[in-house]
Length: 330
Image 1: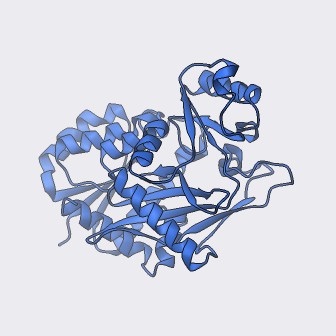
Image 2: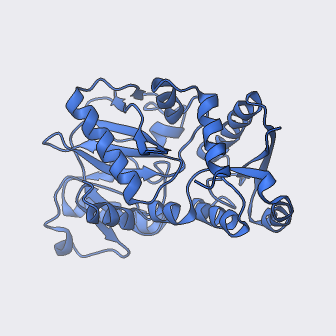
């Protein structure tokens, strides 16, 4: 008899955010995969008001129940995503995905890039802004730059005006981010191809999955970046014009460089179970880490699931492995 699994995901805030509501589909896909493997499965949407009652329940079940953690935040706030993982850690229950320390680290893009750089993992030059600087302070940055919120994900706050080529434009972009999202980060905008690489934890260490390339088919002159509109707004002209190709068409040298860099980032940031590393090539063709998502979307149609299948593993086996890792305390 297999143990029971509780698939938890963040309750919708009711704001109609596609990026928030898509987790319902993810929970459904995970539950179906686990059911096909013979697990007793229950799904549960949670927010902060549910935690006391859930804590009592999980405290009573102990290690007879594993939690499949798909929470991307609480109360509509993505910054609270690490808090739910910390809650599960305090209860001592087995759960899938990354621990709160890795999630907290990756949520702070400036701190994340500092850790990567100190570990020797290549990442673009950057500057974090908690207040609007004067023009002299940004005059010598390596333009063009891309400006985005320092503590958000899902391309939130990224639009065509995020790529800037001179100090005045940078100040304008930083000001908009500060006003709407909080701290801003500006990093060198890289001209090369864009990839994402899923990484799975194995008994032999992190293993990179086949790389996916994000191929843009935007109109000429439009910055080649994944804006919030391009990713989530289905009636936007740019929606569907950034298509992932997996496995990517790369030579052996680039394939190995992408895998090595992704695995190094996974280790440096203390990830476990699974993660997705976003990279872009610099002018010399070197993969540079621009972001790391410690608990990316793992719905059956998502990019990480495609990479898993491209590696020769079924989606159902992948989901099963995550639960086994949780029960084994790994």
